[in-house]
Length: 164
Image 1 (cartoon, helix red, strand yellow):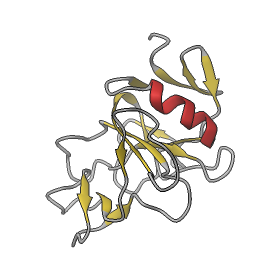
Image 2 (tube, rainbow, N blue to C red):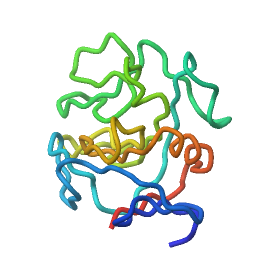
Image 3 (cartoon, helix red, strand yellow):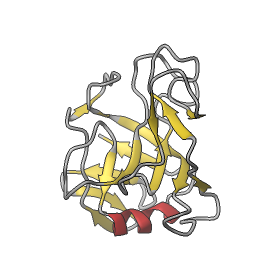
């Protein structure tokens, strides 16, 4: 491990000499992640992308992609585009990236079960803002908004996320 790794600890995520309180999935940590189990997958993952709401904030990094009204993430194991960014209209089950709440104003995506997904192994393991302090997620890792805004530009594609 290096200071440039995002490392989950009992106190939160350690990154670049700082520790940030974080929330994990309501299903705890699991090595055998499955779609809908609410768990955060154990392992070494990498940051794969960064999305942001351009109507709410400036790009957090030069490589960030804006979230538009038609941006979705497929969470349907029957979908050939399972666990990828898709656009509306989309006939399969999906999650909207452009939400009314601020949870996805900044979203770091990971390479969990991506780019070639195994159906049912889990989708959309993101780093995003939390609802309230340490409130469990559906499997993602969530942070205070200002902490995520600091982390996002530092965590370039390929940055390791270590979930022991």
